Image 1 (spheres, rainbow over the protein chains, first blue to last red):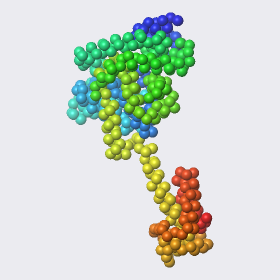
Image 2: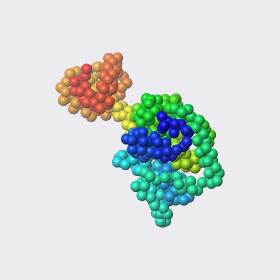
Image 3: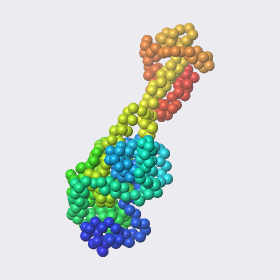
Image 4: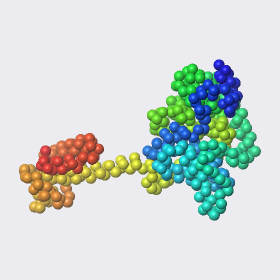
Length: 228
Length: 191
């Protein structure tokens, strides 16, 4: 099939129209992989409310880079960004009973992050240096500012990682690569991928897991450097 | 962490994990493994979609965990305390209820006369006499303490049976009906 050939070419097409796959699932509404309205988030929030701290750890790991990026629009000192990011998550934990699920968890968290940064600036009698509206939350590309201050070493490392990532994906068996790319770059649901690849949903789930695992192993130690 | 759990974690990345699987994953004994795996996959995800390398990502998860652990130790947590607080509360309450039941039920069963003799003396005596219910309740009301020493074989058997029935009753009602049971015992004047 044409779409399978496009996917299996191993190119990291970031736009659905380049793969031609989204048109195969017109009722999918072009669901993006990063969509903030997350079932997993709601599941984890329910667990946190029931006293499950491990669930909150997963939410922190998932959103910490985005929250840090939001805060870095207001505060430019990296240590302050870290402190305020931490503070925002603690506030979120303490207020989680007040999250009603009317909006996505990330939108709610975004507001907390913005308020934390603004309060910090007000407490230092400074005017906010940036601005962010909660309506921006879902479209906010949080990484821009952090990327802009990356050192040359970091830029080099990023390029190396991008290359390794491309290699890792290109080296995947075709059946794994197809499922993985349909999910990651086209944001299709497992059900849609199963329909396109003509296999059971359980197979899709398994293939995506194995692809993810293979990429993780390929990148290996390169992923183990993080700023703490 | 076995492959089944890792597959669940992968499905969580894609919002495709069911509730039961998530519960199973979160009850895994080594949550550090779960979190580390999740972090690596989130790192790959960020690299693919936002161009972040993991080296550029701020990691506050350990600091947040420590901060919340510190708070949890120093004060009752606002969110997570509900479950943990229930059980510690139940044991003292159950003990208190058993003591109350012993006080009232056993005293009534053995026919204490608190006005005339000490509870220990009353328990030592073997006089289990049938008296009107109201009269008995009036008389056992001022009892301050119970001494369980000096019971004869029959009284021990009597108390053991009572405790067994009390425990059975309590297990059915999760502790909520034990006071009512004690009153029932005292009102009936024994077994």
